[in-house]
Length: 146
Image (cartoon, rainbow, N blue to C red; front, top):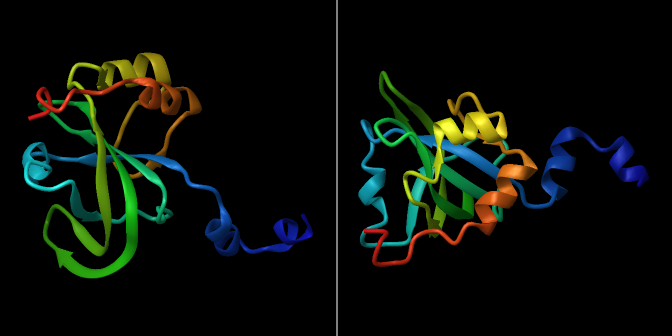
């Protein structure tokens, strides 16, 4: 306990238990809808604070505007450098698809009305109530997901 009282935020972050995140994806710039067609592991822009073992839920922007994928973070801090007028990437993470959700299940309107999420502009932790609902949801059967 004394370690936790005196440890720096960076050290505390290293020992924290796995966390659930919601992160945005924009189909205008990356074809996330078909990213998992031939593989269940992809590279993704790493957000600050995300570490190996965390769970990321991909929120797909318009025209879908819904959480559509649950992924486990397999690896982080993969060096990468890319910048354009839309995005700057300094590091990647490997994520593995665990579940697909129906595009009409966790829509932006549902996130706003039921879970108090009014914007998904960058990686953010999610409320426990949303985490529980996402974990409880059975997701799509494999035939429905493609």
